[in-house]
Image (cartoon, rainbow, N blue to C red):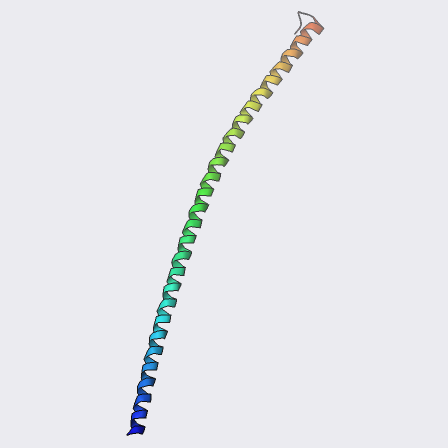
Length: 107
């Protein structure tokens, strides 16, 4: 009768509500898993980009350091050449001075 019909309606409604709740939980779980996966992919991509950028910077700095090293070596060679010229010039001046101070025959 009416009480039985009311109970059946109530049970059916509860079952339908339970199904909706389960579907909602499943959908929410799937969405969270998708978001977590997307977040992981994004973090991976950011990490790759960061590593690429670091590699590029490292290569640039190595090239610049190498160029600086070459310039330093060149300037050291130039400095050594100038130092040698200065020593030779001083020796020449001393020898010339010695020659004029001590006479032409003594050097």
